[in-house]
Image (cartoon, rainbow, N blue to C red; front, side):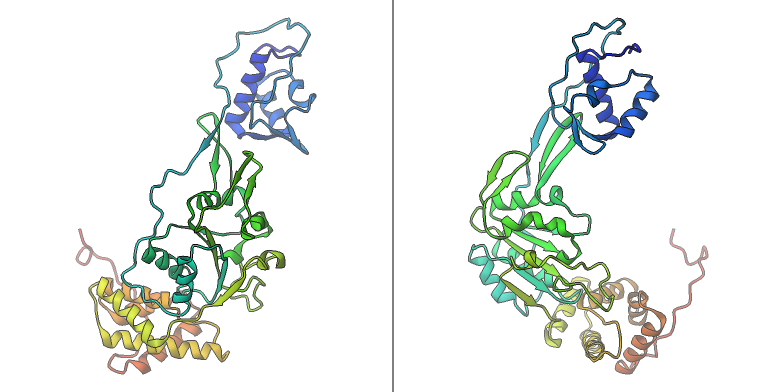
Length: 388
């Protein structure tokens, strides 16, 4: 491209196409100037002077085919314009045929299961907030209800980075074209599916984009101009380790304080506890059956061990506990290593030394048939004990 003060319309399209290919549809002034200097192009007055592409302080948006400003002055030197692929905005729809979760043969219903099943079976819009300590089956309960009654379910794992594009939908560049990707919320609304907002207390104030949806109102998608009405059966169920007010003990350090107006959109809050000892034993036995390592005595001791630790935790004597999920991890480790002591130790190594030592000592007192659990020495790797 010749070094003149002006660009032909074709050259303008070429520069924009190259900028989008290199930086994406939204480009900063600094990136544009760096690119122009690197390629020894003329100063791009057509980008900066007319306000056509400006979308914010120092930001320029090439996401749609904005009209190209035409100069009335003649170009003295030009080179043939390169062939470019014009940017076109398309829409990408969900093509999943079935969003019904698979049944988990190890799951045992407990707690609020029946009442939550009644809510989901009603096909009415009735948001629910489920709070409880980690690993006690909050999300699994919702998934297994949907699996049992064959309801479609979309699980969204929330983090501090989750924003409106992740939830509602947004534009992205695919093969040189601007593609609108519909978000999981709009997909669920159209299909009448259940949305699980998993770990919702890890989110930020960007979740406020869901306010109208959580009120059961139609959603106006400002990016497409479409008004989405929820199909019968659409519902939102949130799970969290806190009640949306953060945590003072630092146990869930990533938990955020959620806006009161946002929390008010959930009519009811369920406080999920760990299952009773009898239910938890059934869960452990079911997992043992799946992994071909059934040992009822071992299951009974694991449940007793976890129950004592949880009671001690509730009394404030210790800062950690053993979740139902952690017991399932121990069963899986036992099925792999065929060693109860090793399975327990490997699955509680994530705790600090003092806590781990107390947990191991407690289990040794419960299971008197085994030797006190000692630290497992590292095995030396030799050709004789290494599988080929």
